Length: 314
Ligand code: AKB
Image 1: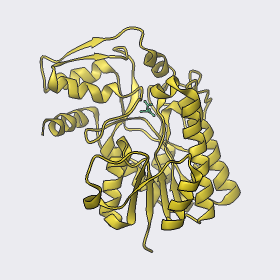
Image 2 (image 1 turned 60 degrees about the horizontal axis):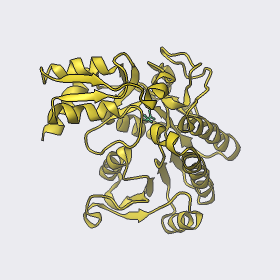
Image 3 (image 1 turned 180 degrees about the vertical axis):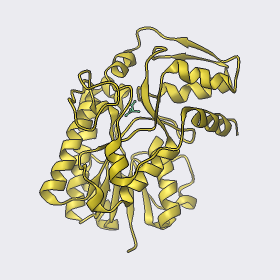
Image 4 (image 1 turned 90 degrees about the vertical axis):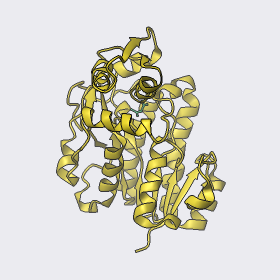
């Protein structure tokens, strides 16, 4: 079957790399990059691009009518730190954007849908270490609340309407190709840029704040593996726990010092992102993903650090 794939939120940190990957697998013309903003690259050379605002139902309908997509990846979202600055907008985009897309996927009989959740769906009363797939979830950011509610809607659309929707709870994603946008885990990307440019970085999270993280190559591979797994193997229709590695700013700095020995790390005090990080897990138990679709990460902290520095230096 020839797939026609919409990637909504294609210019973001994940979308930029996912679109490239999907175009290699399915052909450039079959993957339609959709975003509210024009991309940085030359659209003509890369493949189809459409302006899409997930809150504009007329606009969405036109796109579904034009392409009748067999697969849709909805990546457009406002992340944790930015969400706290404008909670109502974050809720509107993250929640109504999802519901609009799910409804059009039903109407136009889209075969498979992908929507990312996050470790932000956990909260202060979730277990911090090896956080299980099923446990107390009491997120206290609007982003986290929208992710937990979104997970429930995904499972609901699967159970009530038979929609084949799949999801991962992404940890902090580390990448060098596209910038992150407004997350609490973003320090782990900024640190590499500043280490190379200035030899020093001021972290907005404290030295011992350990969080689950993953290199983008693993995240893209895992996302595609989940989407390609046979439907009967997908037992979690809310969102799968998804783990790579876990570290804190001091451990990351130590790893960077193996390549840049004089690198210095300082710390900001009283940054609002600290409270968000403190409410999240330190590490994730992803045994359901390992069992159901054989998930296995490849990038350790050491390999990721080396790859980030090598690629950013180019
Ligand atoms: C954020 O920090 O908000 C995101 C996430 C963990 O979902 N990177």
